[in-house]
Length: 329
Ligand SMILES: Nc1ncnc2c1ncn2[C@@H]1O[C@H](COP(=O)(O)OP(=O)(O)O)[C@@H](O)[C@H]1O
Ligand code: SF4
Ligand SMILES: [Mg+2]
Picture 1: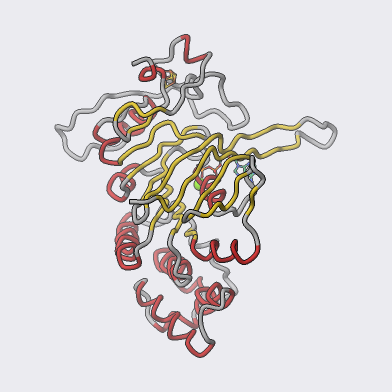
Picture 2: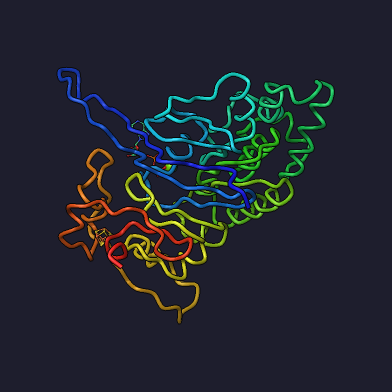
């Protein structure tokens, strides 16, 4: 299986001025050296606590924000390479943009309240000149139908729908552009549990039907476990463990992943798990600890962990972890 997406050493620093009377600046390393590939037709999950850099990574991949470093290759085309000063532009960029869509977390704020569903779903299709005007309405209806909405939705406005239905509109909007790849940024986090599984099932059906690839961002490990083929666990701007989802849940290696998995209710009462309790809170992205960035919370931290940053290494087949406990093996 080939890679539809390759992300190499991605970085994003947000610079914040420290006040009107000072020139001091604070640097937030929101994304700090993130690398991963996604195989065509699969779902890659990105998990981690709030603030660890998941959404920023998603936006960088789509080039919705300017990167501070790194490279994104989509469908064998370089979207950008900061170090080599490569940046796709013009028609090539527009074509690539159509192939890469995003579904946002909050269906309340991501749909323009002043626009009808017809214009929301049709907007991108018109912009990219995908169809004749006379064919547009039927086309929009077919995508609404595929997302479980009927023709009556066309003339309505977002506030007339429930949260789950709004997310269906957001999915129809993304899908109508016939993308190859969708970044799904916590698409079910704002929905009731009963609605969440309906939306996830819809997304799985659509993926199969249209041969899509997803980057699925979530802080909910339970969702990721059943939904994703591979996962990357993010901590303070970087990936600390990645591999097949089944393998990572069966044998998590990084102390942070172990702690995250231990905090999820067991699926079977006899399931055995190592219990790791985290100390303290996640640090600020403006204050990343020296050495291993997890050392302020790790129960296994030793001298080396305060001096040397562990590399993300393949410690078992297709299973990568950045922790000195394994690097010594
Ligand atoms: N536009 C911005 N300006 C300054 N800091 C930002 C901006 N967007 C995100 N951040 C910071 O970057 C870090 C990562 O944020 P984000 O990618 O939204 O995390 P997540 O999606 O994992 O919750 C956080 O510390 C956040 O405060
Ligand atoms: S490198 Fe050290 S501090 Fe970091 S996760 Fe491993 S044991 Fe913990
Ligand atoms: Mg987010």
